[in-house]
Image 1 (cartoon, rainbow, N blue to C red):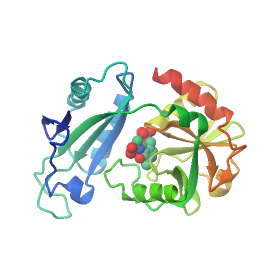
Image 2: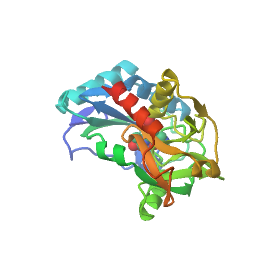
Image 3: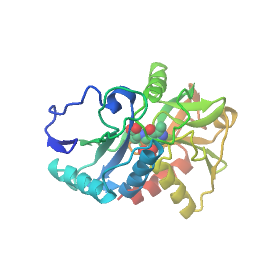
Length: 278
Ligand code: PDD
């Protein structure tokens, strides 16, 4: 069952208003949350980011954190998610429906929508890694807001797919930002490098978990900008996201990263992450 604008509806029964601003303008926000063994992972961090995204787009949420938590729990119950299940929860809030004007209509009521989907962990890929393609970051200048405006992400992901790679690594004028729907880390001489959490990247929750795990385990991490030349001579690369976890990247533009195999620092962080989620 899905939760749509205050009602529980069956699959296939949900309807979108033609002038819903999420639909017309991408005017809304979302979160993708992991469910490991029937339990929400990092839920509070997702809620905090959702409220921040809402503030940044001047959307006053009529739901409290407690109400959204209750909704998430009910969603798991109604979909019979048990401790055997790995899944994802998708939660979207559109600004709502109103006659189509660009500026924010007054008195508009946000529309909430949420569903869960079974989703196995990418265990095989985590061992093998993914290939990546470098591409210009064509997205806007507020990538820190998790908005429904994802056309830039769609196009850079497709660019990678068309080139036979599994994801894209984005750069702005040669400075590496992140991936199409994940954050990027480089490893050099045993230390981590990742773009600062500013307006040019999404402040990924998995990214923060990795930084925390690194700190707690004596792995030095630098939140700093680095360029394509640095990327190309990195010992290891990996991306992080809710669904891809800590995914090694074994080649960029067809050239091997390090020896072309997932590296030891990545493997160590994967092992720490594995302990963290269970
Ligand atoms: N993507 N960067 C971008 C542009 C993202 O879209 C995402 C998440 C991340 C990683 O954030 P987190 O660790 O909080 O999942 C980084 C989600 C999973 C998606 O759109 O499907």
